Length: 272
Image 1: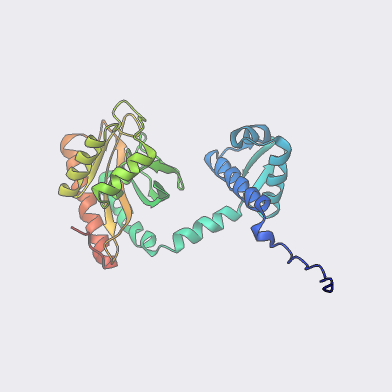
Image 2 (image 1 turned 45 degrees about the horizontal axis):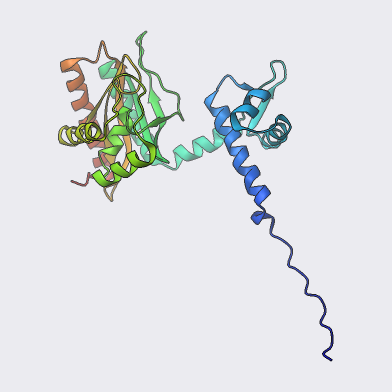
């Protein structure tokens, strides 16, 4: 009879592979996204409802985020807000993209010449994300918060970024995300989207004709890196009552030329 073999000890489980740990991280990131969407803050019960968690679970996650500076609690109002650590992360994101600093003087010049708000946005997870802005001094003006995400298919900066995509890539985006109406003028047909993008490629800029916000119009153009990828989109936006007819065309041409100049400075060129 064979000698009995000692029981084999199991290797200790790697905590990084723990499903609970991954789930907690995912939930914590969901909470951060909710907090970022409400600068004034949210109550614990509102946060719990938005992410579909029990208030007790939500509180434990928030407490962890707060200990690491990602969330903060205003004790007087009971409102939770994003913490200061997020600022450092956001700044690191921007610092890692030298073209943002390069584009700022051009944005200031665009805003000064046009009297309208200039924005810079990058594509992230199939959305356009605002990373820089020079605000108009006009009483009535366009405004977007830094870090805001807007759909690629109905925003000026998003459409400008899409002009660098192939028609097949655009079709895949439409298939996965659909075309949603944000206003009664939004693009809701794939054929219309392709027509807008084709026109944008020909003239060097796109026009957001109140697609995303009723009463606001935007002209935007992409600029390119060394391998021909669209790094970001530059835009001017303002009330549709001011950006009409010839002025919209003149500002579109101005934005397009500015984007080409930034591309030249970076050493990039559009893939034709």
